[in-house]
Amino acid sequence: MKYISTRGDLTPRSFSEILLEGLAPDGGLYLPAHYPRVDVATLARWRGLSYAELAFEILSLYIDDIPAADLKALAAKTYTAEVFGSAAIVPLKPLEPGLQLEALSNGPTLAFKDMAMQLLGNLFEYELARRGETLNILGATSGDTGSAAEHAMRGKHGVSVFMLSPYGRMSPFQQAQMFSLQDANIHNLSVEGVFDDCQDIVKSVSNDLAFKRKWRIGTVNSINWARLLAQVVYYFAGYFQATKTNAEQVSFAVPSGNFGNVCAGHVARMMGLPIAQLVVATNENDVLDEFFRTGTYRVRASAETFETSSPSMDISKASNFERFVFDLLGRDGERTRALFGAGLQRDGAFTLSADEKARIAAFGFVSGRSTHADRLATIRDTDARFGVVIDTHTADGLKVAREHVRAGETMLVLETALPVKFAETIQEALGRRPALPAALADLESRPKRFTVLPADVAVVKAFIEAHAPAH
Ligand SMILES: *Cc1c(COP(=O)(O)O)cnc(C)c1O
Image 1 (cartoon, rainbow, N blue to C red):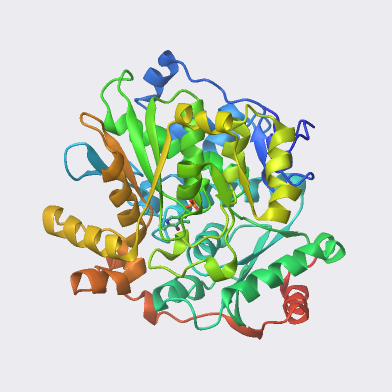
Image 2 (tube, rainbow, N blue to C red):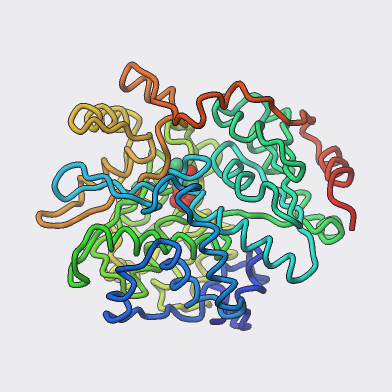
């Protein structure tokens, strides 16, 4: 399998070449040159596999430059009951007829980002060892992504993590998840500023190409193809659990921000998994809902980006969205470049033609939005009727799922985090704190390891120079 860019660069690249990369050189995102089709015989064979075996089968269709035995070992080492809490890895929880939750949040940081990041940690370690190289991952986080990355990379050979977060602005639980890591290759930099300051510093360091090359700076952001690929697996795993035969269809409702999670559903559907609808659920930051309703994609300014009680979906633009649009446009790189390149830079928006918009339905996408009041009502209702406490993001998914589920349809709502991560809103909804998993009972009292730094690029660079492994 070779990879191409969404903006017309057709230079074929192998998986290992793009594994450690961000954007393609032409500013596009990497996608496989085609989606392998999974026929009924293959689906039937996969139905009986364990999660790790299924992951290996799917990964093998896209990765042909890692020997099969090694890839199999990497999948087996990643998706274990010890790390993800059960043999099913992504068990279903039935709610009412037609609606079930698919639990993606039983990994080390209790959010779905572990599903992909845990594999990425093992793939990075493998590839760096094979090349005899090291990598310093630099990132900015306001919570979920940073902790998933740190828990995936901790103790990995050849990788160090420098994670910037806004000093004093994360929840005590999120802080503890990151700062309690004692691994020597994990560096928590608590920046005296807000999240945007952290992100600006990361951009500024990454734009210094000489520094970037000298200190081998990399990222693990959501546009990484391997992350998306890892997420394709749980759409198949959810489908197999929810059905008895491959003649049945299933729909998925996905709490969405950067469009990474639901884009993996799109890839699964393109491969032939019998998915009826892909329901995109947003919060008040409804860039994507607006697009699916109107055909206009309009990036929001910071002043228009709201801080909500489902904070991991608070986005101003959806960084993976270009991948879907490329497919929607019949993989026309010129047209994709016209929409996402200079035009979007200039106008902050684009609108599909009527003909282009009419094609969306064939891809199964529908959408909806949810507000703080909806979130509270859905959390209360789910607790009262089913005795299940869901987190704020999952509540957005469930609310919008109900607007689209049809009689006789099976819809899986992806549970993207456990409620304990967003305890304040759960308290507001239910009048009580959510339960803490027993293994994490003492999390907030564990010793913390972090360094407070001013919001200053030069200081962050100096920290990296002083702490990156010698080479
Ligand atoms: C990241 C995240 C999302 C949004 O996922 P995208 O892939 O960015 O669409 C939703 N819920 C939770 C809990 C998250 O951490």
